[in-house]
Image (cartoon, rainbow, N blue to C red):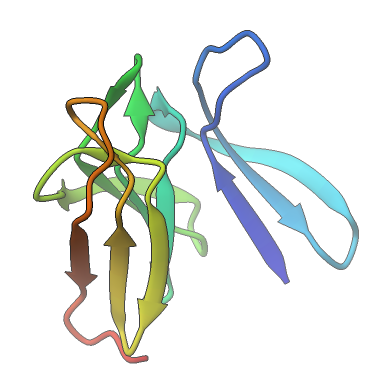
Length: 124
């Protein structure tokens, strides 16, 4: 019943660190927190009740960061690194595994990779 948005690109072209939550039942959107650094063009998957923010663009460059957001506590933690930096990638979850497909890599060119993220104990 809630949709989350992490970071994003403002009308000025600058990235934002805002974490926003849209409540479907009320139609209300609110800023519920902030990332440590502004990011845009990131992807996200849900695994084991947590939301993982994957890659994205920071200061115009692709990043390999993986962040974990715990919606129950509103806390963001560093959770590792991708094999390679990427933004604008497609993301999906299947059978307890998060997948990051394609996107724009560190050299600013399209990539044809699939990166997988699994969490011990996650079920699909």
